Length: 115
Length: 114
Image (cartoon, rainbow over all chains, first blue to last red; front, side, top):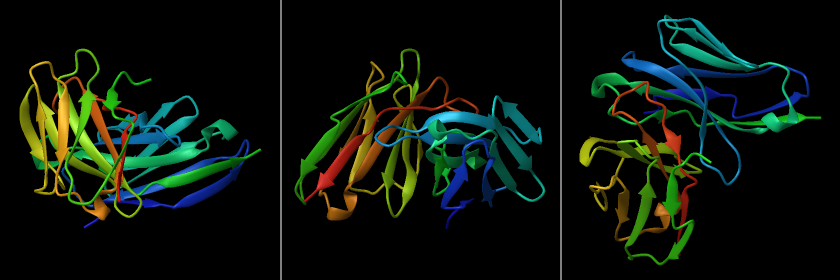
């Protein structure tokens, strides 16, 4: 059972454009939603995270939009740059374990920013 | 550099063998999480230790086990290895043992089972 569904699987965006990645979750007990960025040969690194008490969080060019009723959240990368080319993972945590459980990840989006 | 170290970087072994992966968390972090990353399953949570005690289990096989030592480093033991165990294994550390604590991932150990 895939608890966090991520789309698209791959995405090509022109430099300067907006990259949008979407995720949907099933477990309503999730209460922490981070996005991770992974470059080839490296471990995932936290990009930005949101809790369900806010609908949007912005950090620089990165914005998370969160829709609690729809159980969906998305990552927007404004003014996308070639250096943003990486794999992005949405994740969720919480549930009955109160965070003792690890992160539940989406399958990932391979983002390519064309110069 | 996340401050989390993992050894070895690469491991090649044969089916049926046993291996041990090691993780040293960031200074001051009490939690260690283990994850497996494979092409078909993606990133999956295996197990979580907090200050030496097991806190939660995810999709960890019975052939796999882990422990966290008094100095807070952790080891993941994989036994009776199968071809399908070939994957990247990451550990991540965080200050606390609950949600909202950022998890810092190590560089991973790439395991190849031949």
